[in-house]
Image (cartoon, rainbow, N blue to C red; front, side, top):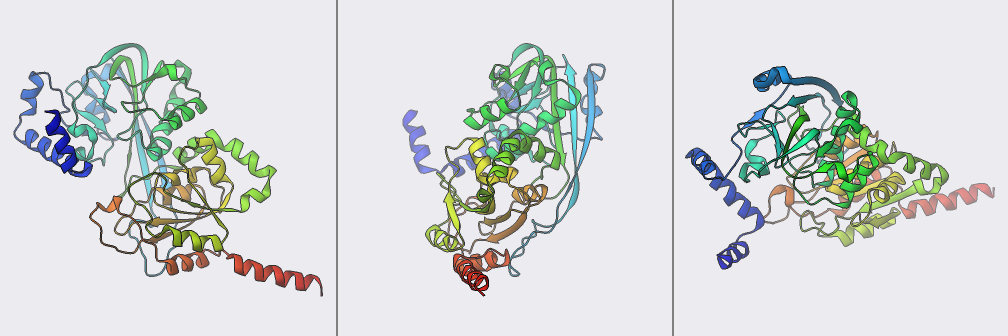
Length: 419
């Protein structure tokens, strides 16, 4: 069996293995075989219940007397991005929408936290309105048994809480809802889900005043469960609200602002942020990119192995940032207003999450798309080939002076001073 498993892993890529498993689970659900497997002890989720303002009471009707429901609305507004005339991305455009968050507190109603989700007693996942059930990891996972805890447990998880962007912009800011209705010290535990905790999880939790003794990763139920579930009503990428942006920014921004005030020269830094140790969305002609950007005064940096505080300090000291689309751009949370940002997308893929962050931070946001090259990868994994002439063109549009033009200006200024 071990040999078969090893051969299976060698023959099929991670992506293809995931597709095979997804297809298998879809077949098992269509044939209604999963209920039979549950009787044999193989537990899986049943269905996905999309919660919003209109149906929250209906979903929790089975324990109406033991449930409190709060509803919070946050507006999201963006302005137009800048780009080359020939590169127009339909998914990155101005919009106005709202985020609706339902905060639920239940007492002994059979609900539980498992596999990074809130589940009802029938093993239905309760989550955001626009989520596709079969896109969730839990769709193809077996459920673990729960332990019963005394006290109040709050939900602090997400389908992808191990992802830096998801944690910093979606998951951690859930705390702002709990702060609105509770004293965080009165919450006994926070359920974060089942995944390896990284340094940034521990660092940000400490910044938020939550000790690791209160963190629960195992599936659980409790005397009281509290969960905030958000739905964002727009056609792409579920953008975060300004309130979520400011919650995380404020955890670190005091130190960054103090550092910038004491050294105005540091604010003139220009950074090209490399992808780091990854095997997707690599910049194939990165040497050419770095050579060009160096003439505009850019330094090359990576975010690998840096604390959140260190990353925040780098981004807060920048006047310009160029980077391929990736988790490092989450640190736009800490950039100062009017900082110029040029985000480079793979060919055929867009995601507006960092465009939205740039809007919340009042940044000067540009985008550039990769040239089309032959590669057998999903769109969001494709490597990037940058047209150097287009990159220089967008640098000029962004009014970024090259070192040559800066030298000419300096000579001109000296001549004027000596007249």
